[in-house]
Amino acid sequence: MIYIAIVAVLLMFIVLLRLVMIKKEIRRLSRQVERYHQGLSGKKVDIALLDKDFEQLAESINQLIDLSVQSNRDRIRSDRELRQAIANMSHDLRTPLTSIIGYAKLLGASTVVEDKRREYTSMIQNAANRLHTLLHDFFDLSLVQSSDYQLQLEPMPLNGLLWEVLTGFYDQFNERQLQPDLQIAEDPLMANVDASAVKRVFENLISNVIRHATGEVSISLKGEGNQIVLIFKNKAAHLTGQDIDRLFDRFYTADRSRASRTTGLGLSIAQSLMLKMNGRLTAELHNGYVEMRCEWTVQES
Image (spheres, rainbow, N blue to C red):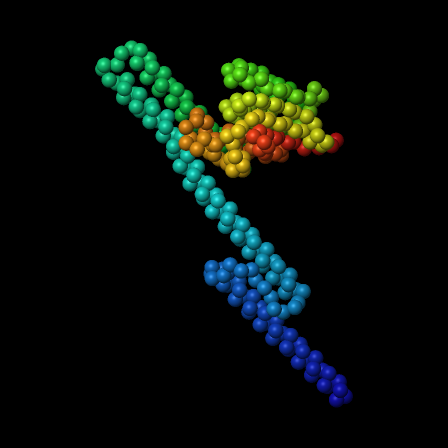
């Protein structure tokens, strides 16, 4: 009996010791979390007690810390982008408004001859058109990026839609003396898209090519396995890797002075629409050529 009593006492002592160690480890974890919460430490939590449950608890806490760090980074990045977007929007809107005000004052002068009057009127009209385009793009971007904005997806032949849009840009290609190499599959390539939205994607990407292409331009549409891939490729020696990384950012333009007539919203709108249609729009730079790549995954019937 005495041996049983001794064993029972030892077991009780071990259990009590274990409980003390667990309580001590809980307090230790609590202090680490509190220090992190107060900003006194940026370290992840660690444990001194070898215990599977505590290891899982520490891992879960560290995962939450990782999420918190990433969320904070995203917030800082979003705030920075918002400030830059506001600055760019202010610049873009102020430029045509300044022109309109300036030329309107010149028109009001009694000494203006008829030729100058027509010139100033034309300048005001151009600035007003520019302002209209800006406001239209701003509205479209806010619309397509809204979670409430829904598209009506249905099977559509991308070949026919692309040819329809390309035909409308025939004159603009000629004006820029661009002769695109078109490699568009003849067999119907069906994807679940919104006809209006996918046309807008095509229009924005083609407009981007026409504005910035220097030299060779190629446009291909083909099936690759269970995907449909549309590629716009053109020479763009002025672009850098940093530009490619930011091409789809709102209001970003590779024109550092923002002196061009573009808002920098077209590609962002196109990418947002692609996401709404369960597709992808990416960009890569290879040997001085920029490649815009649209991808749709085809569901097997």
